[in-house]
Image (cartoon, rainbow over all chains, first blue to last red; front, side, top):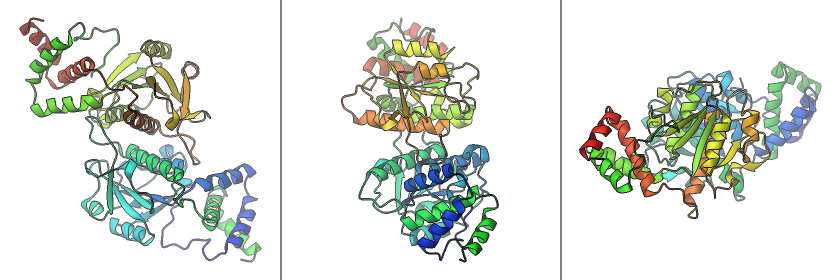
Length: 238
Length: 238
């Protein structure tokens, strides 16, 4: 599981872009050319301009479906807040997508929001009953972290109070809310499609970030990746 | 369960719009004014311009989530083909939406397609790997029936061959398909939003259809509705 705790040392931190390129060339020798081409292609669609925050998702099949949607829409970062519920992506629903998306665990919603604010994100809570901005009208000029709550109780008051803005998805029926995984998918579809079409938004990872991402993906497909990486670093005298 | 078999007599068939209005006034006496206002408001968003076809959905929680999304987006008709799997909307996921959406059972995909063609629908299959039209570019000038397949095997060859067009949802990740309920929600969101904004599309039900719809909804909220309807008809000498 590529659980990337924010306080843990990134094994690629401190290296120059050129050194990362060298590491990538060395690691890519250890898996198929097809996979390398896939990494090279998909990383261009990857974004951190939009991120996802999940607060206390009860049903792991829902949480895993959200991870799957993030991967499908190229959203790299998922922040999980575990006030009460242990989050364990269910293999059958995530269909392996949790290998390709980074998720960060936070002890509570305040830590998550503080972290995201420090990274320049505007925090946007999705609320079905708030008569605020429709998802299709959400301003995307600044990086956006979309927050989704539990199936049963919705977002906690802290999660609502701490948000910078609120959005809803247009609804026309008797049912007053979407399934959480549907809500997340619709929000991501609407925002990422708009983001990709808007040439004024600098949503792609830069070259260095793309390389780092491909290195992380490489570790996912190499057996005993962390250990192999240390050997490669020694061989390349890094 | 408002299972409306297509060969069963509609209890409101043969009545004039004026008579239906009379029936509606009489039935609406039997439930709250709030409910009546809800019916009057929501029926304006209801559409048959877009319909849904589900082929052999295995997991009833997925099928029910699709019904819920249909209700949310105002899509009235869901056609279910039961080649192999018995369809039973799971109460907890549909959250009562199956009361408000009509679903029609068909014995096989050919009957479903024949029926829909006879009603003027263009049949559009959703295929993740087809390099065809993106859902956002699908022509909506004619009524559209969107077909979704099973989680495991996708659409059957018959369902694919019989379709008039194919669409896919843009995907940018490692995962090569969406969860079926997510796929349906995204397709409905994309098409209904576009439909509502397009003033050249006559997507609303006409006055008579809206009344019929409200009569059907009335039967859902009146205890022993069918029986009460017969009494009201007798009283009004219809």
